[in-house]
Length: 132
Image 1 (cartoon, rainbow, N blue to C red):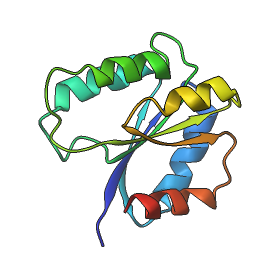
Image 2 (cartoon, rainbow, N blue to C red):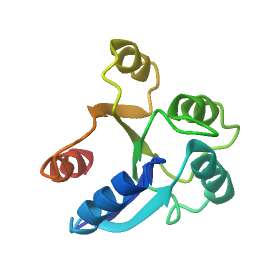
Image 3 (cartoon, helix red, strand yellow):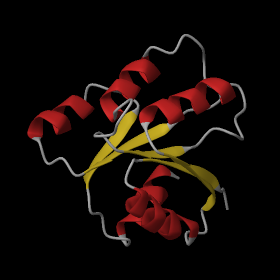
Image 4 (spheres, rainbow, N blue to C red):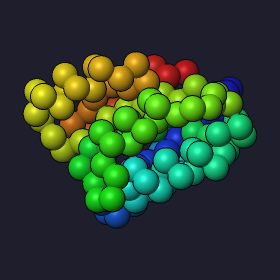
């Protein structure tokens, strides 16, 4: 079985804790990375861009965060001037039900899905198996 690395990018510590626990129960997930905002995650990507094992396979990205929100992260991510060691599949996981946000997500080719929080723990295996 192929195992993957997941990343949670969200400033809500409770959400991170609960979702991290859920992801750790999935046999397909070998490692879970956690970041409190888009800037932390962007810095991590830039530092590890050429190390496939360090990069996440799938990302759960919040939109509304301090320092660098999800949209700012996506803008910077899209404009990276180097090639990543592997493809990263990004899922928006936000409390925003805004049609504007859902439509904006379609602009970015790296965003695979848009999910509204809270998301049932039974949904995570479906998301991961769709990725695999």
